[in-house]
Image 1 (cartoon, one colour):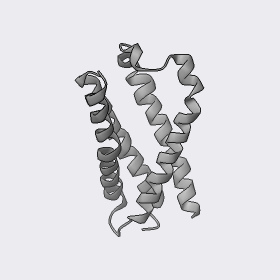
Image 2 (cartoon, rainbow, N blue to C red):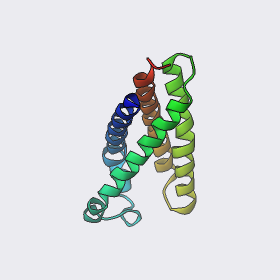
Image 3 (cartoon, helix red, strand yellow):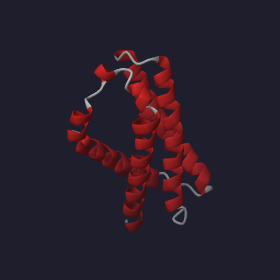
Image 4 (cartoon, rainbow, N blue to C red):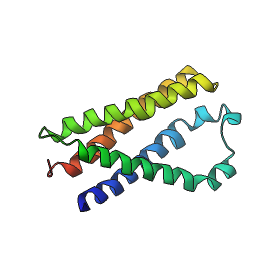
Length: 135
């Protein structure tokens, strides 16, 4: 149980940091081209606790599911496979839905999906690395 909580905390920190780099830095100039699609900076700041709560909920679920599916296989491969699977469920499906209902450009959607692939693989590797001695 201690390993699970440690992994949740580390996954939360990695996921939060990478989400900031992707959406708060790398994609921010593209997001600013469609200001009516997003909250104002001040409004976004007032809703930031909900973002942190979402990241925490994601981290708990991510680690809980990973811990239940451990196999006696190399940890790195398990982390990469798991990260790719979660990417398909959480990122690809979400951004395709956003693309269908909001006027984002195809290039923004492709960048969101591509950058989140890297993030999910890294988060999967993080969880696997912290659980590797338990497998």
